[in-house]
Length: 401
Image (cartoon, rainbow, N blue to C red; front, side, top):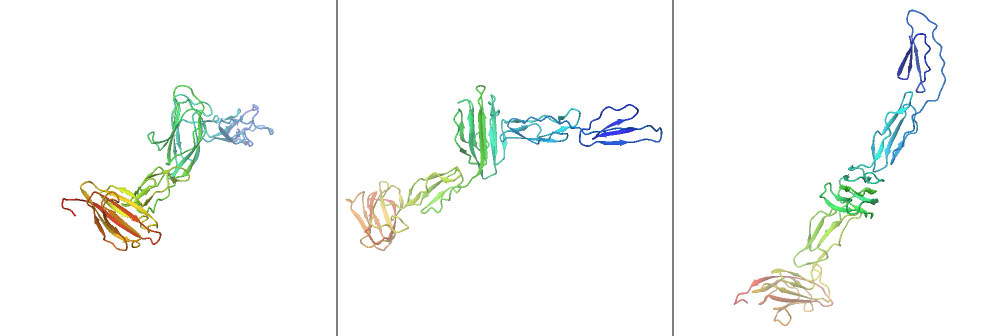
């Protein structure tokens, strides 16, 4: 018996008929001869020569894709990939098969822009289906950009064209269609650069039944979500809310006797350089104020620092009708005589004067017979100091004072 094995597929040849021409499909051929114990014969004589192997046809490179590998002989492998934003449809690797007619084991794949998906790369591309051709009708596509916690998406548009007012793209902070909207776009104008403020961003595209256009191409890149600067220390007041992350708001409140200078509520803006939408406010002891609260505190200007020189300040305290005003100093440290606090039993300096307070004493007090008290502070050009006074409204009886 004669046995010839070409690669892995054996061809058995025996008898007296001259075999047909044989061609190997690789650069190696294995021949094995075997005889048994009976009937000898003349045997065989064969000749071989080197011939060029037939290759598989050059595979097509998919549109918006790449081909890796330029050898197309038997068992050679060619790989395919897609440009960012496109997804491979088909086999990523194909192999040239042996045989008389050379062919690949799979057809070349395609690169398509899918309708939706989950993107976890730190940077990538999102395309409308069919891009750069026109998108189909009746689309409802959602892409989820899912980044590590602590990162947001920096989004830039390279192309944009939709049917105005009918086909639109919207981008939201969060994975739901009811999450806060970053922007909604339609028409031919290129949208601005956008910044998401969470690690989870939704891109949603909708098209109706008519007028399909080129659609959109956008890129995103992860950026680190940093907190806005800490507003502490906030002197003479306190801050409400300890979350300084993007999109969050904090409010500022002053202790009694101080007024807020600046914006009360600040919001942390999104952006690569994170900051608040307004400068930090401050709490100051005012130099003049109309006060209508039932009780409170008046500090010397600039307190707890010393008051400035050459100041003239007035405060008008008004409590409910039928009440008088009780005033007591808890701190009084001024330049004697030259710096002083004068108090009148009424809304102006024509009212009876309740007293002039100066020097370095405390526990001084005054009582009004009306529901209004005028307080005036004067400092000269030298020697600063401090004062603190408390007041409260007190019901006035018929025989009071």
